[in-house]
Image 1 (cartoon, one colour):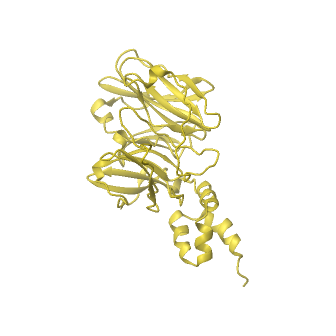
Image 2: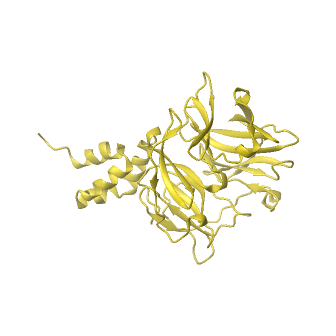
Image 3: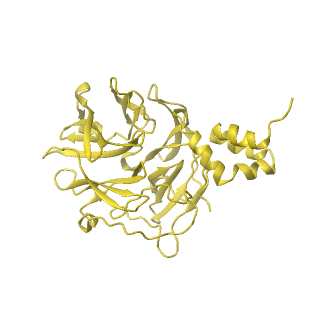
Amino acid sequence: MPRLPTDVIISDILTRVPAKTAARSKSVCKEWRALLSTRDFEKVHCSRTLTPSNQRTLLIRDLSCHIQPMEFETADYGLQTIVPLPFQAEIKDVMILSHLDGLLCICLQHTDKLVLWNPTTGAHTVLANPAGHGLYTDLTDTVGLYNGATNDYRLGSWRKIAFKSNPEYQKRRFYWSPGTVCGGTLYFTVCECYVVGKNLVVGFDTNTEQVTEISFPPVPSSGIFQGILVDVRQSLHMVLWTGHQDMSLTLWALQGETWVKHFSTPTIPPIPLSLWLTITHYLTDETFAVMSNSRKLYEIRVGNNPLECYYASSWFRGYIGAVFQQTLVSPIA
């Protein structure tokens, strides 16, 4: 029986297998190791493994860091795996800020240094440099990851850009969320206060590097609210919570410059504030599941308009976790 050419095995087979299987294949021979370590292979493999079964949650709790596979049809989780930290830090000092292509951008709070980490392979690189770039201050800074023109995370240098937003929004009374990339734009919620005040969405076009402002969906004039951005199949959505003692949920989609309501929560009772404070993230696949760590609090049927979104909201309260895909993408130059 004739053997398959190496290029066919690499490009047509190994780009479609799970990241850990592809990583183990590097030990076959030196040629395979070299081919499987290229940036081109990483990019193709990453693009072909955007499937529900490849999504994982990483949670930091009880002084441990662990990963669990996600079952979107049931909103359940598989067995957890403890993940050792490959850098010197205590669990309590790790704050997850953003993710992209299987890489997590984290802050080591005892040093304020930013680190880019692939929890699947364990590879990581410290982004801070002697010039003071790559240091993160929680009250004044925010982070968002995106693919630039070079599509390479590993250039190892910092470049200042003219982020021309309203100078007022750079004052300490405004809180910027971590960035959510969608359709080539990095979006941030900018809130003066979660009770009253000015609130908007700022978009940064990653190609033109131009900044735009988008109004917030309607929010009550009193009570608490919080808007969380998520990319649903290249369409920007916002999970909006409003209320006082009881919190209600609404899902909005941005169409042009207008927010259109997908659904609200008459289908489930309002969530008590004490329970709302435990919510970490959301899952969607024809249903909308509200999660507290790996426990499902509520499940909302979205009727005849399924979202079919496998990333859902990857925001975690208190930066204690992230939703990510398993990839071989390396953060190391």
